[in-house]
Image (cartoon, rainbow, N blue to C red):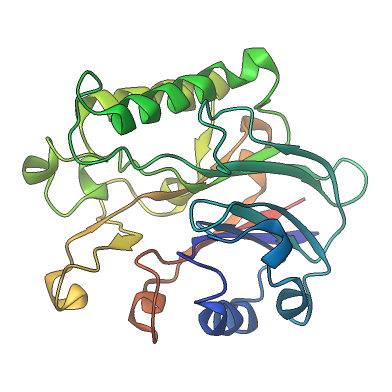
Length: 267
């Protein structure tokens, strides 16, 4: 059966509930993974999301910062929260989706890393590299097994030259520096993860999922980066259908600076 899995850094789920509703009703993803929910578990808007058909919800939140959630039309089981973050932030949640073999969905919010790409002077950047190192170790530690698994989320790295508006201008900007791209590559290689978006959208083509709030006209400037990703374990590669980047969502009322990305699997 086909299943659609979407990922979106929503930048406060309660503040942006109107556009969550708009997206859910328009795209109707079977599974919707949110990052930066920015809400304590006890204040999460369960009823609003169940009204949209997501009767199965697993969350990991904290007040005002971070936070991840998996919303599903199918049952969720085998839930795991957060073995990757040394700071104890709510940056990861995983669950098995569906009955039988199903698929395991890992939802990540990788640390942004601050402004200075030097771990010796920037603790936030050091934290980011440590987090990526734990992701690389995931398969051998059995936290991130590449078997009937999907990794989604705001991974906060734009790895390809075509994933940023200017490779030259951003080489020293956090999210596209060589040290981050190399760490990102090690995570991918450790599990043999398949970049679902680039399976369907050629690597030579510019592709962005994030546009800064600082731009007075984000669409005209189009200075974006691809920070949001969908990866598949190798055994799901042949099951990939369409992928979609919902760029129009950046222009909605009170938008997130990220847009949703979605992949269809035939499982």
